[in-house]
Length: 182
Image 1 (cartoon, helix red, strand yellow):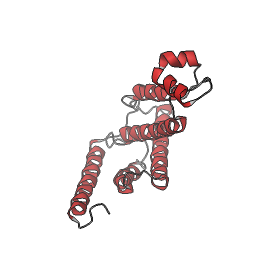
Image 2 (image 1 turned 120 degrees about the vertical axis):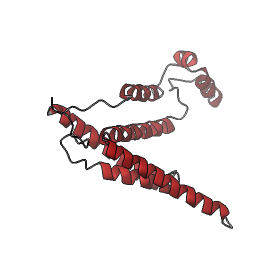
Image 3 (image 1 turned 90 degrees about the vertical axis):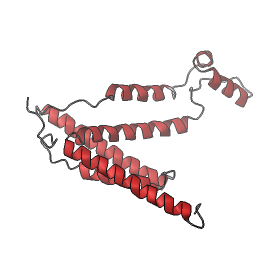
Image 4 (image 1 turned 180 degrees about the vertical axis):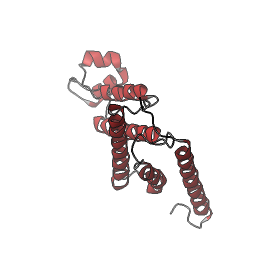
């Protein structure tokens, strides 16, 4: 079975590496990305890179190029399933056993007997968290696959360290300014 080349390519040219490095450098500049105009593009780009990397790995395996499985992939799938289960509506008797706290919360918030409810008390936030988990899992898979070569791992570490240094300098300047909360 053919193997990946010495620089970590699986028959491709590694087109995803530079966008991933740019994403990792730009993401902290979104100031925590608590607003949708900041976090949605970051999540979409990371997810797209992950999907493209997964498709590239699938294509490589189909053409006989050895691609190692993503480390911890099964644990990530189990974590996704755990979050997804929290969104499944359960009958009150089962909810009382599985999650007594959720059952008590639903009882305290309603004057009528509760019907089938999910374990989570805020399904919209749990679904949003699942979307973030999926996007970051895809990005993790892309980084794992695309940065297999030593040279690219060093570049990845360099980008992370350089970004952290820039953020530290910005924080020190902000702390020393006359109005540090601005």
